[in-house]
Length: 298
Image 1 (cartoon, rainbow, N blue to C red):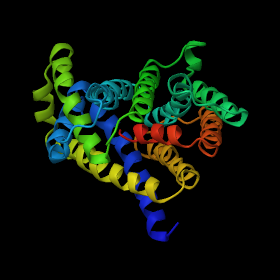
Image 2 (cartoon, helix red, strand yellow; image 1 turned 180 degrees about the horizontal axis):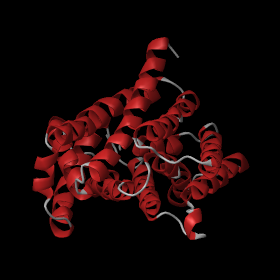
Image 3 (cartoon, rainbow, N blue to C red; image 1 turned 90 degrees about the horizontal axis):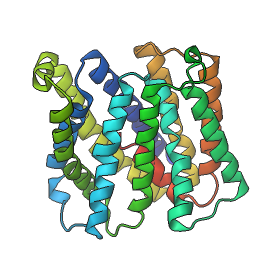
């Protein structure tokens, strides 16, 4: 890999990590309703990517389902979860999307799992559950992280279904993610949230900057750069580097949002990321990378 492309990997990972922190600050610090935040984000994505809407990839019904799961469905759950979860723990639990995608690829696409990838799946789940476990409540798990896990599962379903879509170019997919998400999110926000516009106005320019960063820098620029890298280099080279993203998120969470990071969380993080590496370094690489693509739509 060239130095230029390695620096691009670092930039993409840092952008994704920063976005998780920003999402936490928006829904917790600014008190912006999560569904409203997601609706505004995907409205901007839909407008910015509108030139790439047509021709519609086929089958069309699958495009609509994948678009909503990758966008409105998954992000509604993620933003609701990040309101109470810490960014660092959310980043680790999100990695569970990778083994979920691998298991779904077996059930839905008939792919096979050899024992090393099976071990990676077990380790990832064990590490993720260790991070999710709340020792202050016995064997209970964090409610916010359960929503993060549900978000990862929604994205995993979308990742498997995405493989069966013809002509799903990155910007075209982004356009349909935005279009299929914005209307349901507006309806959900109107039905379950209150005082959205007043809170957004009170937050002012910081909220506008955050949502523009989320929609334009993260969704359109960072993802496009990432897609270019996975087309240019072997998956077993890119996947381990992408593990830098949750590590950067953990570091930023500790520094910026004051995340509590104890021995239990550190051990769970190490176990989960070891599992992720085992999965992504074994063949078949297609579906694990699809999961990484989904995970970084946020």
